[in-house]
Structures are given as structure tokens and as C-alpha cells.
Figure: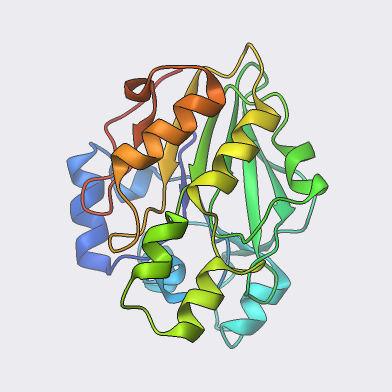
Length: 235
């Protein structure tokens, strides 16, 4: 049976993306689907050209599609909706809405029936709806965008500080830790911190605050870096 591979977001340029996939040992032709969470440039990137070149189905919300200007995906587009499952052979994706300053942003969980991965980036705060969708995860990729003090003291202009730290912006380390503590259970084996600001955060701060919330060692928390991501992980 063919392995199902889903690429979540596509913010890199086409050449850079294919290079990074090759580094990970993945051929573009072997990607089963592309899921776009929202229309911001660092998430949409080369999605259309990548999908068209390799004939990969693309899933996104109607709002995201409209925000992009309703481009032609040549029959490859699938509409993703809140709490409506997307079945890809043995893998099921479950999109859910999040509070973020985009047209109709979605995050998602993925399960093969025996394990569940939660993916949560780009939101300003966690609603009860978000927390409900993250219950029972075996692994969790969690946005830890900024340290509150570092953001306040940064060279960002005031409007950008308000946007990043607002209810529809990005999660601080403290807010991410609160989410982690609320979805923690015995079966949660792996937490990956993601979407760290290069200017307003540091991996050691993230590891310390998440470790405290999850009662584990700081080194148990994997941090995805903008340049290298992480190695392949199994939980």
C-alpha cells in the first residue's frame, strides 16, 4: 500500500521546497495531498505552481481560496471545512477553525486510527473548539511564536507588536504552555515547538516553559528551527 504523505503549507519557493524535500528523502511525486492553513505568504508560497507541476491535490477553505483571488488549480482543488473529515486512504485529516487574522484559517489533526497528530500554528489564542480538537493527540506540533518580554522590548513597530501579541495574532510561549497543559494526557508522547520568531524568542526559553507545563525535561521538547526544521520523528 502506498504511504500517504501530506505537506502542510507551502511557504517556500519552488526550488527551495524541492531541495528541502530531497534532503528529507521525499520525492514531490510521492506527496498525496497539500493542505493550506491560510493565505498568508509564508504559508501559501509556491502552492499553486507546486501542485500543478506534480499534480498534487490541494485542500484549503473557501475563505482562503477567495483571499488568494480564486486561482485556477486545474481540477486539483478540494474545499476543506471546519470539523469535516478529509479521508486520504488510511489517513484522515480533521480541519478546525482557529482565531487568526486571515480569511478562514484552519489547523488540523491527522490520524491513521491508532495515533493522532495535532498541528497548531498561527493563532492568537486557543478557543474551547481548538482544545476539543486537540484532545487525545499522540504528538503535537505547537506554535511558540514569541516570548512576551522579548516582543515588548523588540524593534518591532507598535502596530506589529499589537498584531503579533493580539487575540488574532500568534501564541506566546506562556499561551502555548497553557494549551499543552490542557491537552496533556498519558498518551501524548511527542511535543514539537514550531513557528518561533527569530527576533523575539529562543529555543531554550521555549523548552523551559513547555517542560514546566508538561512535567518533562527541557530536552524532551523538540524545537523546529526556520532553517532546518527537525529530523524525522516517530512517536
